[in-house]
Image (tube, helix red, strand yellow):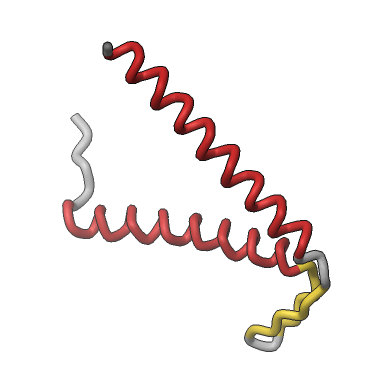
Length: 81
């Protein structure tokens, strides 16, 4: 029974990933127009999909760093043995 459950979950995970990748590809292909982003005097002209991907990756990097910093501040540095 557990083997069937694991196989089912693997198929559901694979299907979910495929659906998300297809949705992202459709979004990217429908948003190829160049847009200009202005922030603090900087101007960037690039396709909308590319700008969204870059902002998402920057958010992942800074969000992970912020979470690690807050966790370190709350728990204190780990002592090495």
